[in-house]
Length: 388
View 1: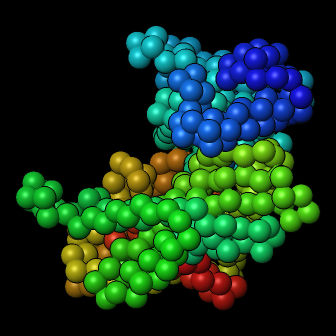
View 2: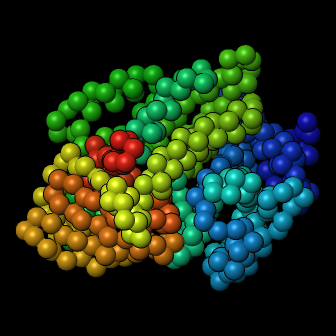
View 3: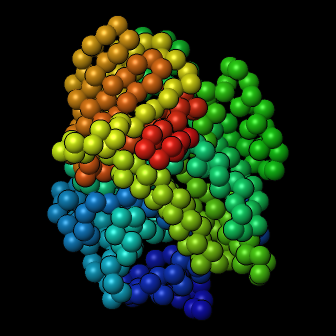
């Protein structure tokens, strides 16, 4: 393996042409990051953590150059030697920004994007990519229980390092509540093995149970057959991973495991979408969101989830059809898919036509959990599946 001096953070970045050389470069840097934090308790100024983003895609990478054109001073999508491997070079002269990503699109539905640049720069750039209207790109939207599942993984020796809980009702609050600082918020960051016990205590409290929404988990995964192979993973609910450790293969295996679980949920949803052309009524059963916390201001809730702004990214026209029911005719701004949604204080039914992207349903679930009710779950009636 090349030394740190020959494979530093950006050294020879143009020479990376294959997955093998890319993974070697990333493993060198994640090992270096681990050593520096272990020995110095901090990273050197020129050293950043390895970051992986998973993109849910409904396009071919060959269209990226056109979709992203105009967002920055310049952007280049460079095909590399290996199949479906690309380097994306982004420059924004006004903001003095230069960022490099490596895109692995071998999995056509769930792309992996790798980078070593500064977190703030790459997060902002990545968000611009996926938030383009009708980009047909989206983030992973990991539900509360899906994140919790990886705190106790059976395929590795798993050790809990940290959890982050963030509940923020700003998107569902009135302007008056925002002005008077009356918006309900909860943020907890904890590390060490006892944080799981703390999580259970808070979840059992009547006042806070609807606010306990995991937004990030930190775990250590150790290969059972070789204890020297391990990774320290931080996984965010929107599909970002940061990693330190000794084995990039272990990191890739963890990413694959997350994607596999997510793909299964998405398949249940997309196999159950509404087929309006069918005469079989069993193929016209909507997806159902069950709220455990009753919606007190239905008009405000409906207005909040049909805004083009983050995090919902839905545009819609809402009509009150009964005292306790609204019907929304909406469009997902990520992909242009149309849908209808019935909303009551106790449940909502999503009518998403066959052929649509099921990620719409998972994005709505994840963000209702974070901004209103952490215990909301999505029921897929045709399969008897509940995504929590």
